Length: 165
Image 1 (cartoon, one colour):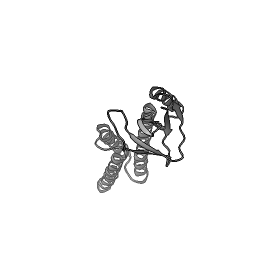
Image 2 (cartoon, helix red, strand yellow):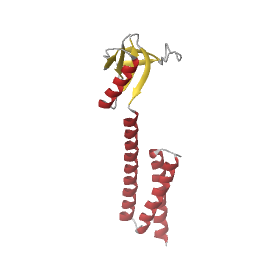
Image 3 (cartoon, one colour):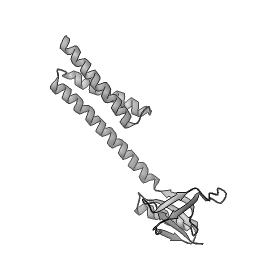
């Protein structure tokens, strides 16, 4: 029996849960439309080893490890690469959010009479944002929207207080 690994690309490989057999280690089956195997082997263990090597060259790939009858034995991805990409995307989102907070405070300080209050409000909203994201109450974007609304409302309230006194 020959084994092959197929890369998941849009419209080339469809995974189905039909034919699932936990005792035999079969996750399901797949339909191949115009898909060519990226790796082939004579045994499943050899295929797993070759698939890992392929993922070292193509870290974004997701591979279905199948036999001749298109039964899927394993779905393989490069976990370390995907974890690193996720971490980088999170850091980028947080950096953009902090930039937006700083621009909001800079505009408030330049256009209003906030002065040092803008810096204090920036530090406060960053602390609240860090608490929200760090504890996992909300994700980066949801926490940013909430904190930006709080920042704008606080800046408007501070402006009103400073103008009346």
